[in-house]
Length: 105
Image (cartoon, rainbow, N blue to C red; front, side):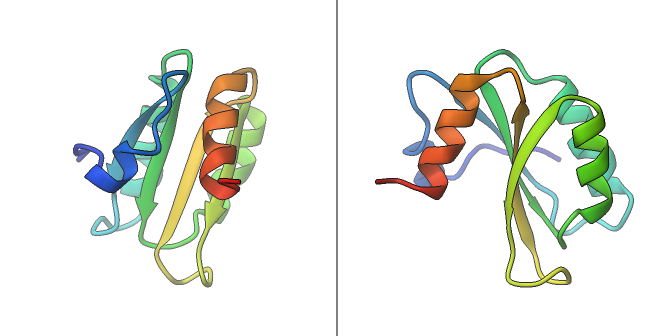
């Protein structure tokens, strides 16, 4: 259920890293988790995942840690829609691209 990255987010891409974007807000558990896991294991070098989820994916965090991924997430509360950015811990270019999204200065 992936889709093209919205125009506003395409502007955040850098020449160094690209984004894979998924809008999973309309899916019921466990489908968002399944699709995120499939997507992150398909990430290329210098690529990160930006996913929109129906709620904060707390069970996902331990799985990411165990499998060598880093993440940044933002949500107003655990039961509200959440967006998460995931990249391989070893991918410094993807990490820097996500850092620029959270701290553009």
